[in-house]
Length: 242
Image (cartoon, rainbow, N blue to C red):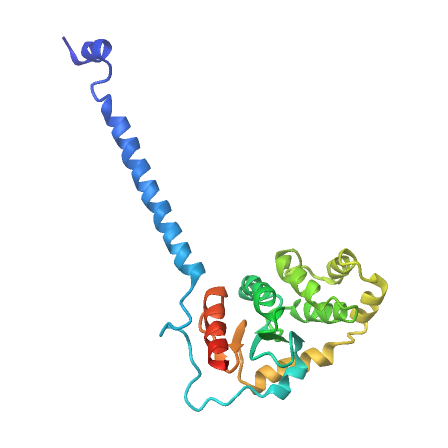
């Protein structure tokens, strides 16, 4: 009997081969998913507070000049044992990614009085809408909504980053937050807070901060700004302050 007839009577000559290939492919896919989950766990869990991998202040590094905090926007207890400071640009994609960590910081550490958070605007020259966005947050702050606008700007960054005139978009955000759009628009049109934002940027220049986001826990600059390293360094510094 020829091969064709044998297949006709007994099924495919390699009947088990496709199933074997499917099984191998499924096993490979399973291994890839498991590896990704393990990698994600280590990325999100971060190092422990006593890890030698965490950044420390270089020998001789002075304390952060606390008087400069007046030029940023602060939230949290004035006497909090640890201060986290961020120098950021609203149009910077990496800053938008760090915004999730800063929101979590406020919920888990600032609200409990353990940490004070200070946000310094550092609009970079290559980002045309960074200054208007910083002004939008400050103008919202006049109506007690700086942080809600701060969060809205970062979560919707892709919607306004490349538009020629972002003010209409920012005004819509103000309306969504329940603010007076007329008051907000007047603040934006007169650039009421430009000088304050420029002063915030001068603080960065004074401290030789040139990239965003630059995040500091007291006088320690994070090497990998993100929740894992941020929370671990905060925990270490809180333990040291007790």
